[in-house]
Image (cartoon, rainbow, N blue to C red; front, side):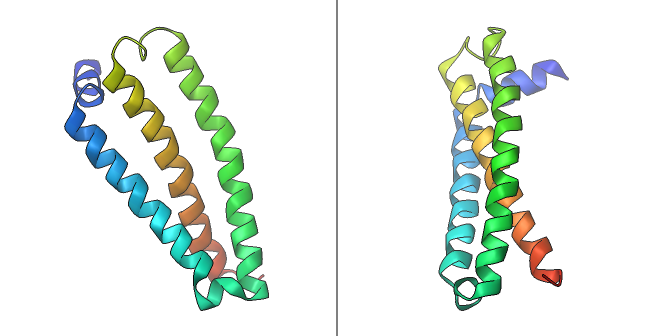
Length: 108
């Protein structure tokens, strides 16, 4: 199991796929921000809640990332380090997009 994780994190193809996913999630967040629904008062509340949630997830992701890179395991290979950083970024964007989807359904 650990060998599969290491081989995935050492792959430059996985890094490109991970970067593509992060870019798509960022575009989705920006698209909602500039959409008609995102510009009204309720939309601004939704964006604020999603940004706060992503901010909390950012601290969690960076603490986990610091543990992984600080132990020396993640810093052995440049591709592995970049994959770890991109994964943290993707998780933060994913949490923001999921929070937008959830809060759009809630009555705020």
